Image 1 (tube, rainbow, N blue to C red):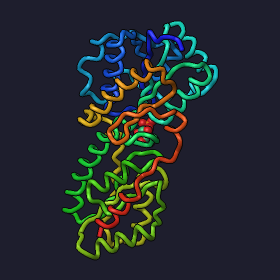
Image 2 (cartoon, protein in one colour):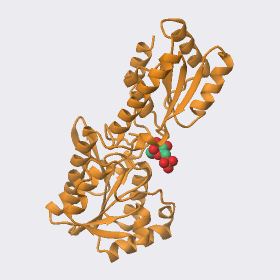
Image 3 (spheres, rainbow, N blue to C red):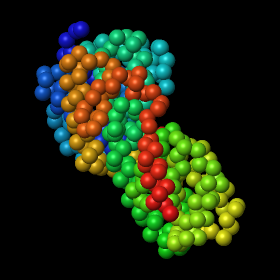
Image 4 (spheres, protein in one colour):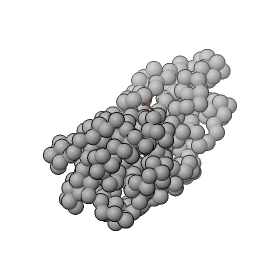
Length: 324
Ligand code: F6P
């Protein structure tokens, strides 16, 4: 193992609130340990093109409260090629970067894993994604903030849904994972959540809506995870069978990714950022920093990106019981 004198840091994939808090923590923890920090702009793209600059502690002042990422981000297809990764490696050597801290979701960690294996580069990942879809961590940086953003938006939609006695289908992000959908439905008292982890037939949905409207409710809200037929598709199907219902669709979109991070995400990002430097100095390689029962853990990339993080059957059950 060689000594780490300089680390490179980048953010990649979809931005997430708390990424800046993580950049701050990694930078300061490195400098605290006499390790130089090189900031890499635009994710892996910046590593390939050499968009790199040294960061001092003042470069990360006043960013803990900011959403987005001051390092910019990108989804880089070139890094998926051997030539792209070779160019990235050449720039690392040129800049005398000994190790990387990458902040992002499953795509980012998948790229890191391949790069680390090919060139024997020490890399530590931080889970930065609103989707919360990485295995081995109870929460990812940005998830709590996004969940709260959705909650606030859905609360507002409820006001108008109730006033007009409407049925709303609200689409939230989460690509292939239903964490945002299921937990925002729980937090806002919605009828149900249509999520990729659990098949919901249109018939089941219609039964639920029929029962809800027939009983005590004069309005209903259903959260739909993006992908599949989406909120629009479901609304159209339901409208055909219930022409008497006043149906509306609301797609929350990218507001879910923005905004100042919650206290939880700032603290999580700060702890994880310090842990990333500790891990590298402790000769840990190719691991993602996770949090389990409030304890920091190191999770091998291969495990973090495997596709079976459990959504929590008990939560599906609670939602069902409370929607009567
Ligand atoms: O992975 C984060 C995420 O916000 C997903 O929930 C969503 O599907 C995707 O990114 C959207 O990506 P883009 O901003 O590139 O359209």
